Image (cartoon, rainbow, N blue to C red; front, side, top):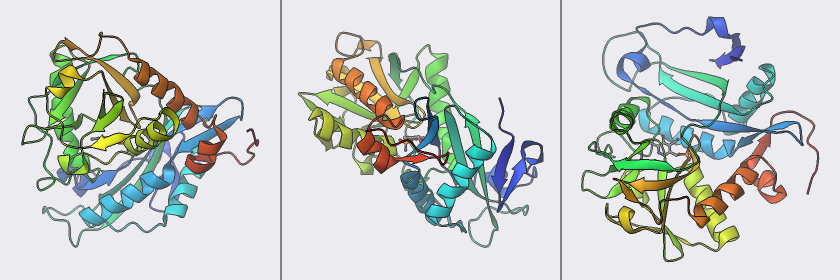
Length: 312
Ligand SMILES: Cc1ncc(COP(=O)(O)O)c(C=O)c1O
């Protein structure tokens, strides 16, 4: 069912009121930034848990700073608005919360300064974004945008043209997902996911200077890998052909969750099936995000509905 309400500039409005002008700056020029936060329904607790909402809003604040967008809410207020929206929508299912901060002036003229800003928050039901049962990937002919062109560490609306070009090329050529290289030819990330290689009992992932979005799932994988699976992550430059010889490869992101890769450029990863580490990590991740593990629930999961049973 579609959401009944959304939040815009200080008010909860009904879905039918959700229109912006065709002249809106953020629409005309892509001058805005956003986040994607998942909420997971936990049947046992009769609860929706927002996963790492604080870290998502911290990144939104960074994106706004880069784009010179004034965000008139504290992080605690943003979390409160998010939980209230899910409650108002009566959502007792997996949801995707999308805060958008954007330039809302109707005036012509490309710039960031002296343009008024707006903030919108929506919450929609959400299933898988990509398959979690094994992706066939290609290396894209489109290069990942450079930090000096469109800041890669900000989640900028307009920069998703880059992701859309890569994704459509991949799908139209018969693959499931694209892996993008930097302009120097090193591995950067998927179209909307970070990437990890498993090699010799360690995780390897491109470092922050490889024009990646610094993913919150990436951070969760590094922490869970070390604490729960005894896999240390090395953040370093990764060559394209390392993808062909890695023991395992997986993509991760709020949308993608943990998505094992079973082939890259027609070469099977490992034996061409989901690897044991990818599978273990996937299982662990789904338990963590759904609030099934007390320690991580307390650290990372924000309950939407007021009564929270104290399971250990
Ligand atoms: C370009 C890009 N890289 C990486 C990610 C993964 O980031 P996160 O784990 O914070 O969702 C996303 C998804 O938000 C993305 O759009």
